[in-house]
Amino acid sequence: MSIGVSGLNHITLAVADVERSLAFYRDVLGCAVRAVWSEGAYLEAGSLWLCLSHDEHVRSSPHPDYTHIALSVAEEFYDELSSRVSAASTIWKDNRSEGASTYFLDPDGHKLELHVGSLQSRLAHYREHPGKGVVIFEDEPTKGQ
Image 1 (tube, helix red, strand yellow):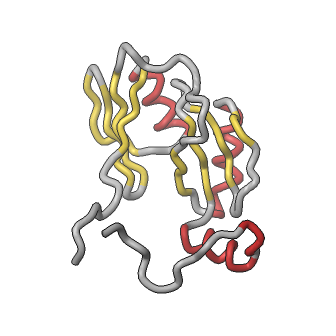
Image 2: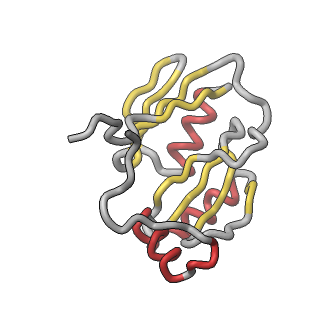
C-alpha cells in the first residue's frame, strides 16, 4: 500500500449564523443533524461529515474563482431537490458539464453543486467525447512519487 490520503475526512464551513446555516443544510439539502453547540454543528449526508463553524471573519460574498463543493444526489431525487435549492438560494452558474447539476450558493456564499454522476460516469463521458483532449488512465491511477 502506498502512502497517501485515503479520502475526504470532513468539510468545515465558516458561517456567520449557525442557526441560519443549520436550517439551510437540514431543511433545504436534507442533511441529518448529528450534533449542535453554540458555535457550530455537525451534519451528515451519506458518507459526508460536514461541520458548520461560527466565524466572525466569514466572507460576505462568494469567492470569485471556480472552487466549489459538489454534493451527490440520486437521479430520482434530483429534480425535486434542485427545485428546492433553486427556490432557496442563488444560482451562480449554468450547468455545462456531464450529468445533471445545479450550482448554488449557501447562506454564506459558499459555492456548492448538486450533481448526478460519479467519477466513472465523467470518465465515460470523456471516452465518448474525446474532443477536449482529456487523457484518461485506464489502469491504476497515476500517483505522485
